[in-house]
Image (cartoon, rainbow, N blue to C red; front, side):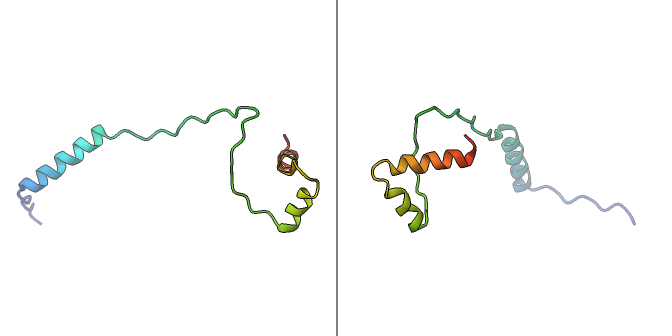
Length: 79
C-alpha cells in the first residue's frame, strides 16, 4: 500500500492542540490536604443513628449520657 497523504490540518485542529498543550502545562495536580492532628478536648458535632434501646440505656443514667456514649466509643476504639 502506498503512503497515504496526511489530512490537512484545519484551524480548529491547531487551536484544539494548543488549548490541550496549555492545559497540560498550567493544570496543577490537586494535593490531598494535610491531615490535622486531633486537639485533645475538642469535640465535633455529628449525627449518629443509635438503636432506641441503647440510647435509652445511656439516658437512664441522667445528665452526662453523651459523655458516657463518648467514653464507651473510646473504649471500643482502643483509646
